[in-house]
Image (cartoon, rainbow, N blue to C red; front, side, top):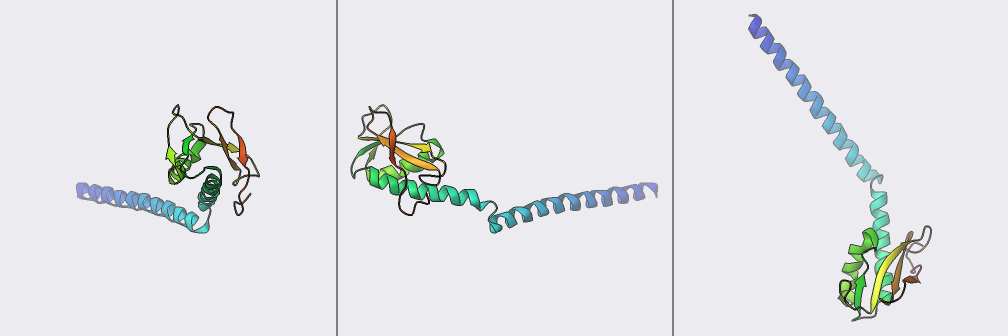
Length: 139
């Protein structure tokens, strides 16, 4: 009988432990879902979306239709989106291929496209800020 009691106690202990683990994960999931819907997590995603939208409009102003474009490797985390937008305007080439326009970004706290400015220059020149804000760009 001692063996049956030990097995029952062990089974109950494992059941309680499993319920605690499941409850902890359920609580963590509920907190994550709440933060998504309350906007706690969405703030950075919304900021990135606004930056990309503004930078794409600035790119449309800076890059002539059909131009050969490079996006500098130092364009930062938004460089991939600049590449995608540049494909709509012209031909994208990788350095050191010749290009009509080289694009990169600069951090401009409080200005530009929500703190980021699109910078363009001929490939041989030092990039200078070309567009600091775009109407409706949030900056």
